[in-house]
Length: 233
Image (cartoon, rainbow, N blue to C red):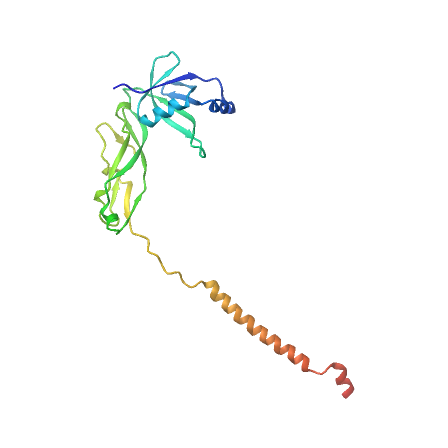
């Protein structure tokens, strides 16, 4: 099967100056690998996106740097702009087709969970991707977790339950949970706010103090002035 090919050129523009390349539709890149000297590259952004959509991060690609022989690579990491979602930089991992390598693959849920269909529980996926090890030509595009066996609360699918092809090893603890059924959160009646009770008490105290103050003021008004008392004496 022919692998997709990406053409690239050596890159001399480094640092912050790569912004100019991006404005011209050129994507900065880098290649690395075992016994491979890291090298900055540049390539057409649209051409890359077209290949990346098909190959993903586990599909082998032939990278042709100028007039050199094609190199088998994996698209190791792509940095995207968080606002525009445009690619900013890509790393290519050159691999040896006869040596195992590792890659991170997506875990996709398939089927329907009976516990969810009956509205008895809530589906919670705790692990959406996992690292696997295999020969470059045997790396899976993704792994599948069949949730049709989840019938009751606390039912779960673990790493050990995932099926992989021969030659593929999942680099995670076998008992680690991938997806499970949790009890639905019940809506509780909100208790009467304590602040309101406290506010009522404070209000009552304030009223009492106010009444006491009024009585004191009234007594003062009724009491004879000091001068009048002296005259009477």
